[in-house]
Length: 231
Picture 1 (cartoon, one colour):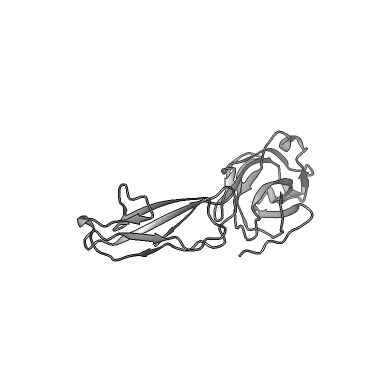
Picture 2: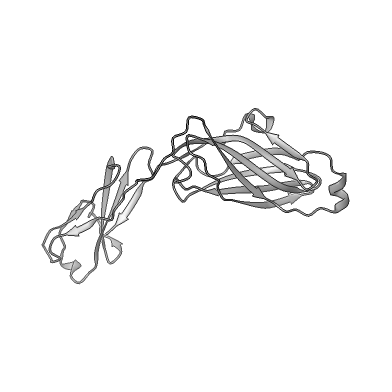
């Protein structure tokens, strides 16, 4: 069962990324204006599960180029650093458009609602800009997202019964933790879904002779990632 460290204070998770945009030394030394974040948005779905990605799109203006960009996120519990990939997707003069992408791992990203705590930008001349949710660029922008939990134990179903035509087969779910609220079943013949075979039992027909039979089960639960396991 996954360990969850319970914290009394809200989590602050630092997501740092480094961008290298090489300006001329003259421009960098002359630049005394902090970088300006003119837009930021959540580009990924607002609900994400383990292994899925959270992506922010942003637009920053600066004369000397962007050197570093940090997102600080608040969450329900726990605290861990997180890998982040950043890409500049377009440039128009001093204006840079890019994305920041983070892969969710519920071992380090506890399930619940996450939001922006602050954003810190550094340009190539060493100027900094720090933004909070009350800053004009963030004030009317909802950057929150929800991380779904995952089942701690999710075994593959086991087929029981005699593998013969007209002999009923049954699928044993196994012990899931926590116990799913709902289940859906699908039987397969040589890797292809069998039409109408959506129960935990299946009786092979003549067409199944010498075929490889398999069953899949999908578990659903509020607040949890929908999970499918195959025999």
